[in-house]
Image 1 (cartoon, rainbow, N blue to C red):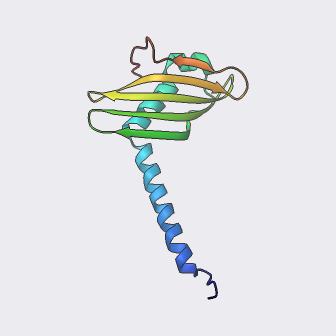
Image 2 (cartoon, one colour; image 1 turned 90 degrees about the vertical axis):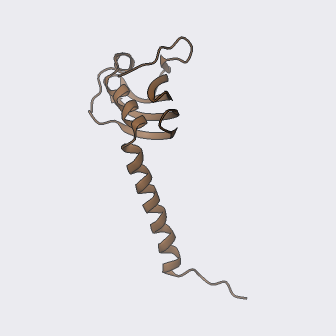
Image 3 (cartoon, rainbow, N blue to C red; image 1 turned 135 degrees about the horizontal axis):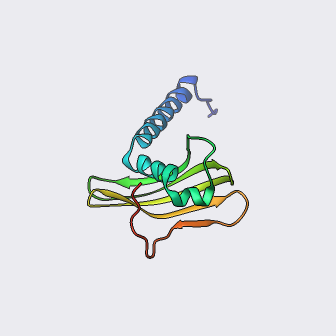
Length: 130
């Protein structure tokens, strides 16, 4: 039995569906509560600015996100790329949502070169509200 090559339609339709799902997922993420909360924390929190220096650009790039949440509870980890006066950093923000309110429970600035800076740690951390 000869092997048949897939037709253009058999390749194009699944690829188009994958692109549509990806676009909808990113659209949902960029309009979600945890993304906006974490972005505001990275952009405005004094501890982040002390670790990275003044940001060169007003726009932050999202590198990675893992988020699950509902009306009252949730958690997530988002990684932003920050270009600042002290270099380029990946700022990792761990979030938790309890009783409908988000809080930063972990945050680290990971420079391209140099040592990682802990901004917010899980032990002894009061919830951070930008």
